[in-house]
Length: 329
Image (cartoon, rainbow, N blue to C red; front, side):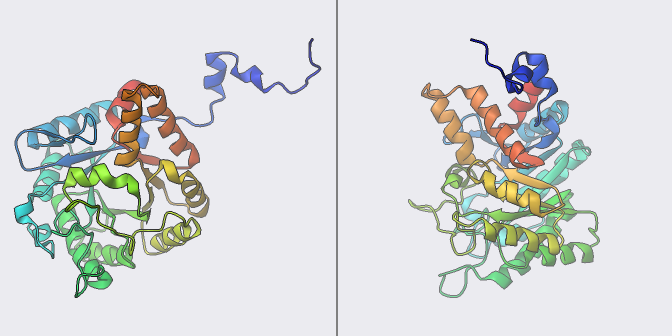
């Protein structure tokens, strides 16, 4: 029986050429940012909870940056793993101008000036308690305003080292405008702020905390008093609008995959570029399911990124960046 149909949407799906011609969302290497973990050891150290990802020494970091340039990935985001002996409650090693992060940024920019370098503005790699800021007296919560003051110092030091974008990931109130003023006062008018504007208190961060050594003791540290409640989408838009008002050049939603509705809401609310962070737990669960034979690894990997882009993200931080960029070539 032949149906009497005027509308047949399948007509534009019947060949690969047609599907490519009408495709609404396209993922490019230029849409990707590659997060890299660095440490002070010469040799790489595999991160068990993140298959294929390592804490990298200096030479390995430089090879990865060269690879990013060759693949057309425009930016890397550097996350330091600081030895426990250098950590304290106030994260004072963050303000040592010779620390691992600053020397790594300077070396990458010297060798690859065309590669954008993004640095995390947060104290959790440096604090013995693993929180993103300074604890209030009694240790029951993170003290907002002294933390913002410390973050301003950190952002200026990162810009001094050569960072192209500084990325406050702490979720303190008022930190974007304070960092903008501090950068401008230090002469870094062109250093952009990529704000973790809607960062949720998520269970998906576990492998990342393993990677940077910010998970202290047996249990994950609760950051619910400053990171966002996963139940709240309207509040996420409010946070993003405040950061744009305070001078954020790019705003980010983190995590990405479980928060596609938030990415869409943010994209519709602002005119600045929107980033999304496909976090360590999203990456690791795809690997785990594929290893068990439950999912097709490459198709699931690519579909996850395409969904984030389709939701409205202009750029995506993802540990899949180099292999996806290579596949896109």
